[in-house]
Length: 334
Image (cartoon, rainbow, N blue to C red):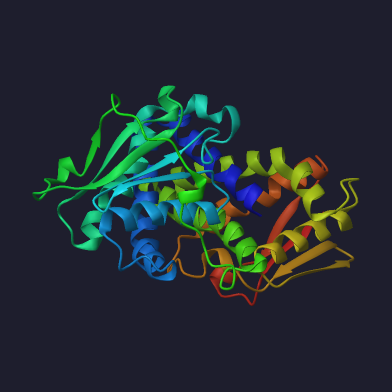
């Protein structure tokens, strides 16, 4: 699942930047990362055992460890209790492959404003800020910067600064923080990596609908989903071990394995009207609260796109809506 949702995250941001504007792309990225920050940051500090550390160190270690769990390349360099660096070397995870060429600088900066600039606020420390010294989207060799705690309170526009003339110190893996193997076995690490991409989609999809409305936001999110589903069907089918020979039963098995891969109870059966796939849970949106119907409609375009890649004559019809009170989501493939 992390492959498909990772691609969808990148694709949806590019869809908004290219179909609307850089400003709207930056808005979407800002609110996605701010919502993620508010939902994950403080709880994550506790989960990773970082709460008692000096704030600059705790923040940098949080980004290092949480991104490591998500399968993101990241480096950590600690200069002292009041200054600690993080660096995301290329290839940048979020801007997959050549997609980085389509990401404006302001969209990347919006990520830092949404999350990194707010850490001090969430910790109740008005002296803590983040200094960005490089961005991959600007042609620099990685997104890097440091958390620093100063001697005075920072104004809101000082919580994030840019200092491209500075450079991060060398990364020494031997000095980087780690996770205890006893509490982070392989199975838990695998789930954390899957959840990393899922969490971003669970945030960005409702935000796109909220910011741009159910019609326009739903259309953009759905178009990006359909294209992503088509582009990544063959790769994800190979990962879950299903056939791509246009047999509807093979596609039903693909949906079942993808559903179970994200933790959902998913089954299929063949009937006179076609193959029916049922999903009784929706783990992706469990914590999302009340949702516009446009969120489900956009999300299901992932599977419509995959169905079209499986067989360009296929029709994937929604016949059950758990988000509207039915017992399950139900699709019929014809």
